[in-house]
Each structure stands twice: as structure tokens, then as C-alpha cells.
Length: 298
Image 1 (cartoon, rainbow, N blue to C red):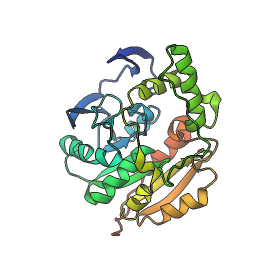
Image 2: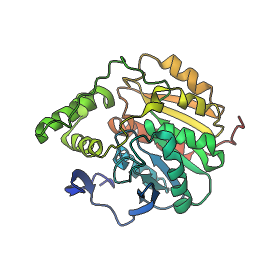
Image 3: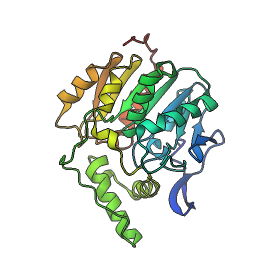
Image 4: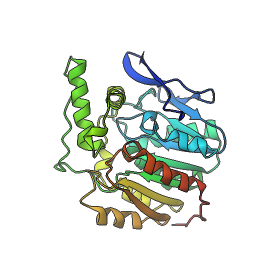
């Protein structure tokens, strides 16, 4: 049975419902400084580390269906809950992606040393990764960006997320979380099961970064211009944020000195590594097995 397809148990952690898999023996929890508290990291497997960064309103569970692939490749998967998300401490109400870079870099140094590392990042996490790679090119060997915020997110794009905090009924909240997943994260609503809704509910309840202003700017594109390491991108072909703008997306990525290519996964939405896990894991396996070329100096 795959590592994370084992029987799951439901528990309450700090007053919110969270999905808690029965972790295998090689899983460990680590803490590094973060604001007035700690950043919580989780590790699976052994071997050379691969760092994975989750998306907005998320946690390590954004990678729930991909960890096996990294472990099976003989690598270790290191996944933090980024500051203001999941089990990690908050950096304050005004914190944005740029504020996440320093505690993330500190955590990498504490846990992984100062070596250059392979990094896989999803959505908001891709913005964090690009800012880190641009400012600290010696710390990132390769980047695999999944659904990165290539184009500034503007109002009126047709993605209307419904509020849920005012609802007292767990069933009503679950209905809203399911609708929001269908609106922005999934292409096929039938792929959203009860476990996925519960994951979303647990992650959304612990999202303390309400204003992600940088994703509405060209911050990602500006950072890309300074990234010379091997950089690739993966999107769900039906990602509602970009499916009508692929030429523009490609043009921004082409401006990255280290850009190697973009892959569109058919019949998948924004959370492509979860909705189309099999296809994404094949891409991840190929990426892990390839030898990175020498970095380009921007």
C-alpha cells in the first residue's frame, strides 16, 4: 500500500479538525524559529533532501499525494508549514510572501545546512521560492514550480470564493469548502471527496495570511529575471487562473534565464499535483532523475 494511502484517522489539533495520517517510522517533525514561535517541518524518507513549499490557505497536505514519489526515488521530502499557515506561527497580519523568505532560509540552514537544494513549490509557495532563489542563488539548485502565480491575479477573473467563517453548521461550511475547491482548485468537481473537503477545511481555518498582495503584482516575474538555476513549470491545462492566457504565461517564463520548459497536464485544475497525482508524479520522477545543468548567471 502506498505510503500515504494507509488508513487515516481524524483528530482535533489545537481546536481545528486536521487529517492526521498514521506516519511511518521514518517520518519526523522538526521546529525552527518563526516570529514569536516556531515553523513546523515534516520529513519523510532518507537521502538527499527535496524541499516542498505549499500554496496559499494550505499546509504540508498540499503534497499529500506526491510524497511517496520522492521517497521512492531515494530522496527525503522536507515540507514546512509556511509562516501564517498550518501548524506554524504567524509573522503578523501584514505578512506576505517576502516576509516568509527569512524564516524559511533560517530553517533550511538549521535543518539542511547551507548546501544548494532542489525545491518544488506550489502556487503561493512558488512566489516564496522565486524570491528566495533570486536573492540567494547559492541556496537553490533546481526549481520545479507548480501552478506558479506567473500573471498578476486581478479582480474580475471569474473566481468568486464564498465566505464560510460566519456559518455555524459544519455541514454548511463543508458545502462552501467544496464549492470553493471546485471554483479555483479542481477542474473536475467529481474528484473532490470528503477527505479533500476536510483537508481544505483544516487548512482554511489555519490561514492567517489574509492579504496576499504580492500575487496581484509582477513580483513573481521580476524575481524570475534573476533566477539562473534550472527552472521548470507545471500547470493543470484547465487551471482557471491561466487557461485563457497560456501564451502570456509562457512569455513571462521565457524571460527567466534558467527556464527549461513548461508542461500542461490535461484535464486538471490549479491543484494539479493532487487532482492529477499520477501524471504529476511521473513528471516529478523524471525531474528527480535528471542531472541539473550548470546555472546561468543572469
